[in-house]
Amino acid sequence: MNKKLIFLDIDGTLTLPGSNEPPKSALDAVSAAQKKGHKVFLCSGRNPDMLSPLMKYGFDGAVASGGGYVFCGEKVLFDCPMDEGDFKKAMKLLEKAGVYRTIEAKDATFGDEQIAEFMGKISGGNSELIRWRKAIESNLGIRPMSEYDGRPIYKIVLICAERAQLDPVIKEMGDGYHFVIQDMAQAGCINGEMMTKSFDKGTGVRQVAAALGFDISDTVGFGDSMNDLEMIETVGCGVCMENGSEALKKISDIVCPPVDRDGLEKGFELAGLIDEKVCLLF
Image (cartoon, rainbow, N blue to C red):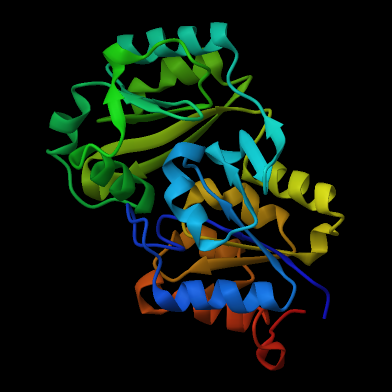
């Protein structure tokens, strides 16, 4: 069996949303896969600062900031913050539309001071929304927007009550930027991300594969939400968690149990990463 490159989303895949503590079964699976010669990377919308607590578990690198910052060990493979002029324009448009924002630099996150009040009125949502709520409620390193000091920003995370609030922003910025929008009707809000079209999780997968000399057919990706779409579309084998998006499940090669039922370990088994005898695809 060929050695594989494995890419793991964090919230809702490796961990429960908002947590930095993977289940023991997941860590055991990662370790077992690495002992077989596979390499395991985080592949997350989190910036490097927010995913750093997980690097202590021995991952080989990460596709961070939704693909905007990619590293292998100590080597940076890709570093692409937003254009400063575009960032300032988008921030003004979003503020005018009444959209709440957090902005993510490589080493810091800043948020509108009113987000906590808005988030307190909603419940439910997908793993990214839950992670964001927990980060805000616990004040996990999210600094007030008034403290933003001009450092480069890689993406804007946004939330608002209605999709129509985003339409003028998408009209103005959509040619050069991805808007990954998730309608959280059950939560009574719209949640999404704005990132340059210069990158996504899929481009990050390709950059790591090229740097390490892996064929793209020898890559495996694990995710749960639609911001994992490009990763799942790019890898040789896409795995979606049972707790994930129904749309993502439809395009994945494997659906494994939920994150809180040893899902990642089962997914590794089903993809033949730790037990070749049960491999479904390779």
